[in-house]
Length: 167
Ligand code: IDP
Ligand code: MG
Figure 1: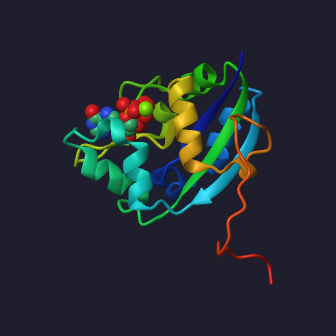
Figure 2: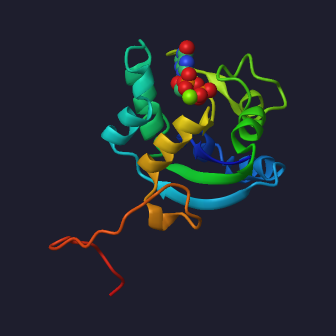
Figure 3: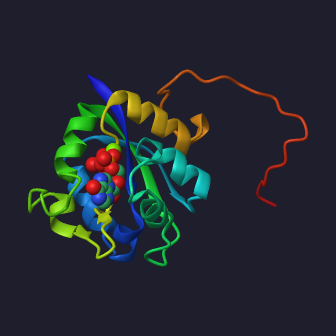
């Protein structure tokens, strides 16, 4: 069954120059990249993305982590991979949430660490099921930024909507 999955290369992955390594590992899946962007993550997006963890003691630190405040790299790389069993394949390559418990050859096992403040710096986010993937993809991408039609979308004609176009 074809699925879409949201991948984020988190700020530690970018700071450690792991983008190439991570994309190479993900290419083993033979899945198709159908969208990508570099994002400066606003507070509300980070909080919405991790809202299922908002009651955890590490939540404030986790938000700082995703926004790049812990690494002086205020950006993440967001990608959508699409294809057969995309979620399972990408989660397997990523490895367990806790980088110390992750398979040593997985992405998180190879490159992740636990900081002294207790955050799992695990270099990559992967949606964990189809419902989560749809919610997350709609948070991080607009329909026009994705080269396939993943979910129903509608056209809007907004008046007085300011946007930048090439001069
Ligand atoms: P996942 O990223 O494997 O789906 P989630 O439970 O959704 O795991 O947690 C989101 C992120 O929050 C993790 O990737 C990790 O960075 C951080 N995190 C999760 N659990 C803990 C914890 O117990 N201590 C510290 N950080 C955690
Ligand atoms: Mg998760």
